[in-house]
Amino acid sequence: MGESVAEATITSWLKEVGDTIEQDEAVLEIATDKVDSEVPSEVDGVLVEVLFNVDDVVQVGQTIAVIETEGEGNTAATEPKAEEVVEEKTAPAVAEVEKTVTKAQETAAPISSNGERFYSPLVKNMAKAEGIDQAELDAITGTGKDGRVTKADMQAYLKNRGSQLAQEAAAPAKTAKPEAKKPAPVVAAQGDEIIEMTRMGKLIAHHMVDSVQTSAHVQSFIEADVTNIWNWRKKVKGEFMKREGENLTFTPIFMEAVAKALRDFPMMNISLQGDTIVKKKNVNLGMAAALPDGNLIVPVIKNADQLNLVGMTKAVNDLAGRARDNKLKPDDIQGGTYTVTNVGTFGSIMGTPIINQPQVGILALGAIRKVPAVIETPDGDFIGIRYKMFLSHSYDHRVVNGALGGQFVKAVKDYLEAWDSNREI
Image (tube, rainbow, N blue to C red; front, side):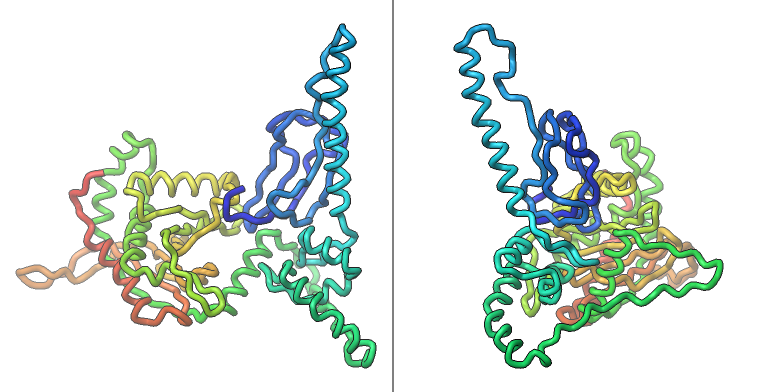
């Protein structure tokens, strides 16, 4: 699933116990953050045991199901010695499967997910071993992603649990657990349509609110003259398509400029974790892409600063195409260090994008417009038609001051305006 992916949520089982499964046939669907993926079987066989339910969160490396396969010796045998060999080879295999099933069953716990809150099998096992019931577990404050309870949270809670129980016994009236906050009832007038948010929609909403509450968002805006880029692309895009089989859009050109600017200003290529700044070695550019259903996803171009324009174009087109077709892999959206979003696709000339946590900056590309502009020449100033666009830079003012935020977006502008009209590709 990718080195940076640690867990996944089971969204549906495509096979039931007793079904015959062929190698590479999809058995279940999983979700990691915003990507849904199918999990194929590595063998031919029969599904004999399902160890997790829909909406359970499973750690990478855990056993999720048992598939019974044919033993090596299940061929017709004519000599008694051959039959004995078959029995010796098959019996340990069956015993091993039974052992695996038993071990996996022991990890199951009666505790289940509660609304938007999920518990990993490890946390469930710890709760079961310590006699913690559902209500008590729900009351534990989680410090993990999306407020999930982690192993460290459980250890800290168990360490103080004894004294807490003693206090509860001494003063029960003061230790009443707070009631879970119930969602407000939906109010709708007659004729209104009630639409349930999708899983991805809920995730996006949570991330956006969390980002606004976490980062001190400020913006810097700058206008760039991209006439040279417009004319150059118009001149070479036909030849590029014929040679590379790829459509040359403006996006990879802008991505190249952003990658160069991040190398010039490495303190924009950081993340903030608590009070600690992590300066990233790699430049991994997130590329916000709108999906057909209206949701948003951010696939990541890894080591973008090491790609030439041809490589950047192929990476952009590949990720954009697979995003539209819902074929992104979990690792395709992991590890971003800075994000670019093209609000100009929908005609907007500028925007104030929300930072993709835990990054500290995001750049919005406005629509390219044909506008009258002052042109400076040795013979004086003239009015002419130029292609221009606004660059909107949102950054986290906790760690990025106005000077750095402004200098960075100015560097992107300078790279775009210095475009070589005779550049070979």
